[in-house]
Length: 289
Image (cartoon, rainbow, N blue to C red; front, top):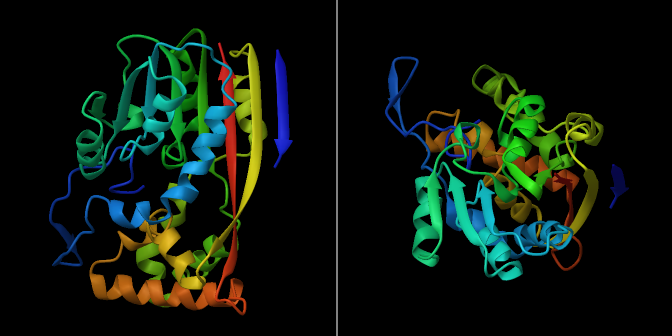
């Protein structure tokens, strides 16, 4: 076996077990829930979000996989990247977000789309490639999850995963700092417990006795964005949802966002062109059967 190591929930989260939206009662009052998924906001940074998927796909050493599944496929952007690499393959995208899948079906009628949580997926047949881009960090119990996903890989195939690994960044620490204030602590105490990524060595030990070949690496992307508010927009569509969906109305959500923005302005001061360098670290895993 070869091992390479290189340094380079929430309701409505794509790919996870999220119940349909229904009335929620908060201290005896009916409150307004957030929509299933704000995919226009998520796609605002589509070019930056597409690059890690492209980098992962470029490292997958499979010549002609026939059956591919994209777990947590969202609107199908990463599925489309898989199609460009292997145009003859049969593609399936799986996600728990009806809004995301509606867009995926609209854009790509020829592919199969499944509405399911990743942890509930029960493959009917093995896949040459089990692929997941920026979804498994929402799914718990990786010690069980990763071997189970790998068991769905056909002989000669691969499990390929990319997950955000940016949870010690100033943006994440700023959200945690705001959430710990007395105003929010009662409602947001468990919000940061919905992210489940482990250190790279964890995945090495989870897969090393199962895989014939493992490639694990981390990359920090240095993104140039339009000031601290762009940082807010980035996290609002992903990690901040774990906080926002626990707040009972839009007024409190906006207040929480503005307090986080004040923290981001300290951590990401704009330059004389109004730009901010926003580092974002991600973890990559490719395991071959």
